[in-house]
Amino acid sequence: MDRIGSSADNAMPESFNASLKRETLQGARGWDSAEVCRREVFRWVTRYNTRRRHSALDYRSPLAFKTATTAATVGLVA
Image (tube, rainbow, N blue to C red):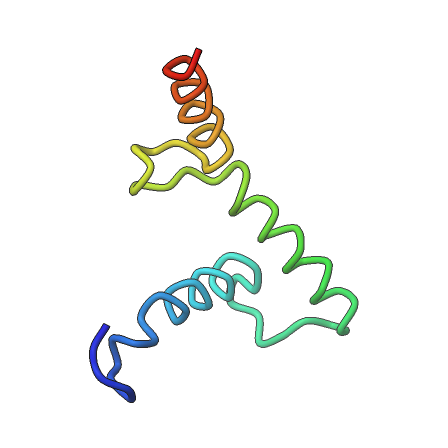
């Protein structure tokens, strides 16, 4: 991170928001209602956090990565 006001400060949230908009709206200008918006965002975040593969996690979902690292850690402790 750089000094306050730097564009690097917002890089991660901006990337997250861009992915959210691109994958949920898919070219539409907005949602029909606030409730539809909440449902779509909740569905997307749930998928993003549990099933979507991430390059930083060796193309595994966060849930699979957590399960694998937890199992490895438990194996080391036992």
